[in-house]
Image (cartoon, rainbow, N blue to C red):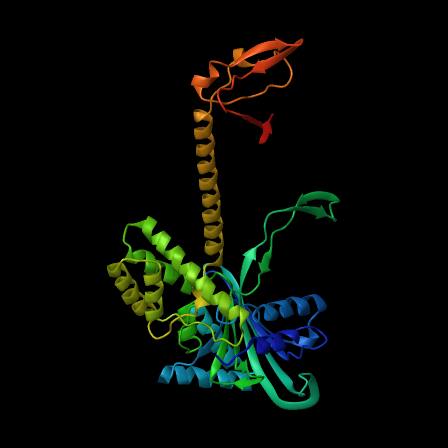
Length: 416
């Protein structure tokens, strides 16, 4: 991967009114029947203030997310089709969105490949970033290293506003508000050329997918001409299915094995996070087989996991953090800790019950005083029969006969 977190942040930081240099803004509104309702072209700097910030927010969202998770670096397919798509995107970028035919081609391709049942907006931006050079201290210098010209495309669902009450000024009353169509934040989008190592990479596309949404492989392949990739959410689900399917209908064992494998993956990822010099862990089929062995998975099931994993992921094994289900590990660890505590409490309760059952209960008749402090004396039953109360010098006493050389201790202190 050539795009770095710093590259993404550098572009994203510029998306504010004081630094944004977007030139032309184009787009079209598509209805649920896949028909273009309207098209528009604007100079970004001439937009009304409210519109300016809304369109800026849409563009900024296309640069958000986590690299390798929902922000993917795509490479062009080296087939004739992939090369043709790359040439088209370069031509579109070089036209600065002034060629209507090139824009229409993009709209048509998006409409053909984007699977969405409702209305949506396609927005395309053009920008030229005068990339400043970096001083040895890391601060920006005035001198430019290159001009980075690029296009941003965002596809945004448009939904009907929810019913609500509002103040109707012309009628001076509270009534139902008129519902209108509202443009949401992007479902997907892309930046071409990619900004990698603070420069233009015409051989790559930075592709954005809303977190939790599918990657739309048909869009990647047929609109961009790139090799499809999974998002982290798709990697995670595919990995889980591989493990569970190998166990067949034994869901309990599948859940237990999957949890143990996730715990090991969590430790591997944590180690890399502590030491940034270590490269990310790539989960090959062989590595997953090792995880299964460590989780004490039966050999035949482990072999099936390795085989299925190889078929699903092929020569593009995911990184460990992409298949890690942190919530599952956390919840499972808490449950295991709670269960261990409950087991300890149960054992203690059994011990207390056992001690109570074996203890000699003090009979009310054996209590030497009717009220006040109770002195509890324990001894074998054959000796207890000789214990009695007696008044000595006007004081009621408990008398325990001693024979031979016997002695007595109270609270560990010998009685003379």
